[in-house]
Amino acid sequence: MSFLEELRRRNVIRVAALYVVASWLVLQVADILLDAFEVPSWGMRLLVAILILGLPMVLLFSWIFELTPDGLRREADISRSADTPPTGRKINILTIVLLLLTVGIVIVDRVIPDTPPADDPSANASISTPGHSIAVLPFVNLSDDPANVYFSEGLSEELLNMLAAIPELQVTARTSSFSFKGKDLDIPAIGRSLNVANVLEGSVRKSGNRLRITVQLIDVENGFHLWSETYDRDTDDIFAIQDEIAEAVVGALRVSILGQAPRARETDPEAFSAYLYSLHFYQQRTRDGYEKAVTYAQQALDIDPDYAPAWNLLGATYSNQALTGQLPFREANEQALAAVEKALAIDPDFALAYSARAWVAMQYERDYAASADYFRQALALAPDNPIILSNAAVLASKLGRVEEAIHFTRRSLALNPISTVGHSNLSDQLARAGRFAESIDAAREAVALEPGNDSARVNLAAAYLLAGQADNAIDEIEEANWPVYELFIKAIAYDALERTGESNAAVAKMADEYADDRAYLIASVYASKNDLDAAFEWLYRVVDDRQRTSSIRSDPFLNNLRDDPRWNPLLARLGLSDEQVAAIEF
Image (cartoon, rainbow, N blue to C red; front, top):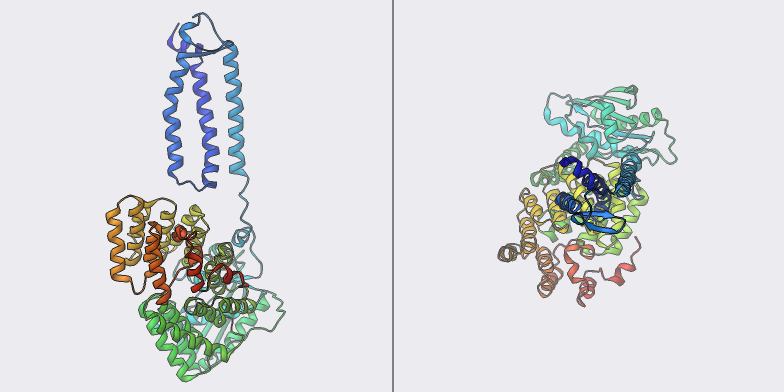
């Protein structure tokens, strides 16, 4: 009898086929379950390795032993002429059944689409494009002076804000629309990326006090012009031009406005020019840009002290300077508070000013009930403004209502899909909800959109760390240029890797260099190291010195502190105890 015939007689070939099919079935089921339980990617690799190593052992077992009607017996104890065809048939049937089951799972997994989360409007948006939806692209500067780009892009943003004030019209946020600046893409491709039915584009030629503004409204589906116009006017007519363009867009899209049509906020043309300069530099999101934004906003207000948008922009700039540490925390926030309150005094219906006021109440005054009130007013005036939705998500996270925060952020991303900040914030909130695999994916999306964004890199490193991938966290944080967060991530990662000396050195350096500003991060390291006394000592310092905090109630790096009797009294000093938060309606 040949060796091949002997393999067949002992059912070794049948067992090999059965093992391969069974392993395939196991991997299909594991692919679903491991993802559901957020097991890291190495879990699947380990399972594959185990299955591969198991194959030779199964084959050896099937060579030595034989399954007979009398049970499992050693092959040496069975007559060589004996055959066990019933056993072979049973193996064949079992192999076919498992094969059909595996193929069925593959078909269900690959053919039937995933059901989008109920709280994810962006998923529904990808299915159908709203007819009354539009993106306003940055108008091209055709002036002889390249510096006039501030005017062409500022005009685009003002038109975008006017159209966004129409509840019946879905308008893509500035961040996403302006991301296509300088890219050689046709309008249908841009429309599909932004999930809008229409695109408004144009150009501006400015020479002295003369303007030539050309605007086209384009149907994304077929690329046809729905409306176009050229305006040859003086700069004094800029507000009338904005009104006419908005009215023309509404008419061309056949939008039925239930309330009052939006009108441009009028001011002195020189003040408007200075305001657009301020807006231009603010959008650069750099230290130098913020400084110039303050300068030009103040110039606009010197000309027109009652121009509310300039006051609000000034307040937003001060808030960002406080957040980034560019100015002393208290000083910058006091200036932001004064500017935003001035904007609201001038215009009590200014939605973005209510959002800015809510931000100061939340981040500086720690008056979360007042912040919730201001956000409610902002959302009542502009329920689909992505900036307000994104800021409201931060408050929800601070109150420990993480699922609400995720809901707000997803609504914001539906209107602003190409937003590094939005995806980065979503990553942070998903991590707070314990959904680490999704958090990693969201942070990767943010990094892909803007590889140089340090905040996105930090959130990706944190997500890796919380998912138990300390080595990946270290690799990622070394790509960021944010020294305090590099120390923070490495201090916790080294401790997880049992590199205790390096961990202690990193947190000691944080204490030496950042105690007056980043005590919260130092406390988080000690909490992660389970040194509860040290963690509370640093958190008391945060409270006493009114230093910046994260969303402490939902911070996963502080999980070890939650059962300590000192936890809720500490939160009470921040206005975030269980009782205080329960009383806040938001």
